Image (cartoon, rainbow, N blue to C red; front, side, top):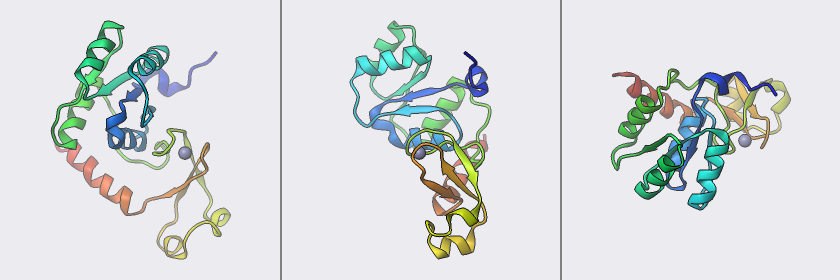
Length: 165
Ligand SMILES: [Zn+2]
């Protein structure tokens, strides 16, 4: 079986239940990040182990258990999100820190998204959004449509700060 190219050279993650915002941001940066709002430790460890994912958690016991199981794990500090991200970038050696629609994964379900022609989604998008945006992406799995709206612009600011190192 052939592995998708990003699996070969980019880290993938399993983000612990408390850290949904981190999972969303990692997905938008294009990193494959599993996340469930409720999952027990043993299940999480098993899934992360099967997929060779890095666990990100603020639960010290879980991180200890993961390390015991040979899983690379990152204990996030109780600090600002920007500090948490700097830590994650450093410890997992992330190379690409940007929000790019063509690379981003669906923030809701972690699937890949694909560029979609504006003409095909006229009925699904508010007219104001159509007036101001030309590029749209659709999630291949949950079919949600994305554009570079306010949310992404705020994230671009966040990413800009991350890159000022
Ligand atoms: Zn989706």
